[in-house]
Image 1 (cartoon, one colour):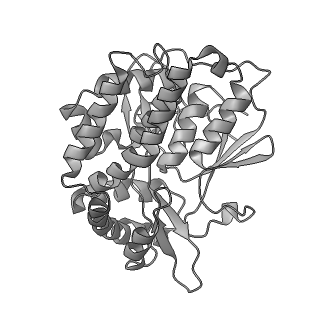
Image 2 (cartoon, rainbow, N blue to C red; image 1 turned 90 degrees about the vertical axis):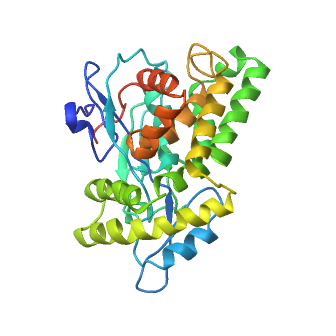
Image 3 (cartoon, rainbow, N blue to C red; image 1 turned 30 degrees about the vertical axis):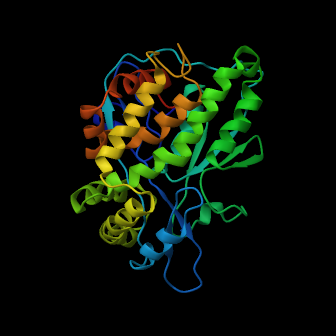
Length: 326
């Protein structure tokens, strides 16, 4: 097997992109959705953020077959710093990630795998049929297979991988550092992700910006691409309005900027929350923000807040993807 390499503008990609260390490497795209089984001839989709599914299902049902996700991809030049590769005796032998390329929770898992240089294969799941995960009782992504063991739920996956591959970390870190890391990982799952959707779908042009890219790179048939691009953009535009109400968001951009500054304040002058190296909270924040970095919302976030410096350091620290070709 060999590592996949892309260069220049080819960094805009369908799978986890890789480029040489001397060139730009791409931020991943992400989507915030999960599909639901339907007994009729139309696929109904459920916008997925944690356990909040009802509001998303209602909105998505208005547009049959819509694929509810967003995406961004671009590249950022910078010196790629050393990763933190694992010792051979603790590194898994066979890792397979079942994903939607644009899923933020999948990107959290990939940020961990990339930073610790754990080779992994990708199986891109078709969000309509989900035939790639028919074998599993768990019908959401990410699903990670590690040496034959199934792991599900992004935070739980990272916890299990961390226990298996970094057994000495908890001994080296202080209780205060562990508690801080846990706090901010929870903040990502319970707060930050809920702000993203109202921003990336806040108007029709931004919704179409997301769907235009993903329909060209996702695992869809021609008909599914057309349906996803236009019906999905319309559906998510209206869903974003409901999300604002659900999470008491008055101004979505202001909420995004506030979240970015809250994270910068948490760093308290440190390069990373983990100090001189990223910890699991750094990887979680980076994982969900990485795809929107080059959407209009992400560009605005970097321009109007102080998060850009940390983001660039994270992009350099995580480095190129450790994805391998099957």
